[in-house]
Length: 257
Ligand SMILES: [Zn+2]
Image (cartoon, rainbow, N blue to C red; front, side, top):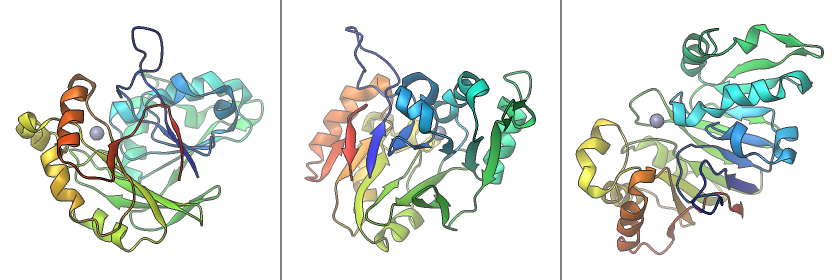
């Protein structure tokens, strides 16, 4: 399985920056998990292929690129963009984003080929198929309704926490997952901002260490979703944990799981 966290910003030399402002993980150049930078950083191949977008929650850094992506492709869409999300998240998108004020309600629009956007609601802890992937959403502990994902292509699996504070169920399900090849876990704030992390339902390196002790499987663990402002501080504190299989996911790099 090919996996890539799309870049969201550029450094002073114009190259993709290691800082992650937005969340959009592309699998096999075909399916996107979250859509933060979907319209901004996709290759032309990805733009041609990605018609399935699976959303963890409706926070702006996870959906910002979605309206722009549909807008960009509007005239060329033959197979409608499928947005996979919980009913709660779909309701938020229709009410607060695709509401004719922020952006057009694409679910009511058609191009010359037909409808351009369809919602595919999924239920928590009920497996669903998207192309060649099997996906299971697990409720996590965030400020708004949010899910993490366990994703399999039949040969390997990976898990993605999305935004969350401490959880139990997610790790329980992971411990029962076969062929787990990688876990992507958030860690937004440094230890010094534990109050802010707690109030906004995110992790710090210290809490992350506790969380990882709940995982009984042995596989590479990648940290994502570090707030850009605290990237160096959080990176250092993660290194200081001295957990051998724990590293920070490189933005833009293509991984094979
Ligand atoms: Zn969030």
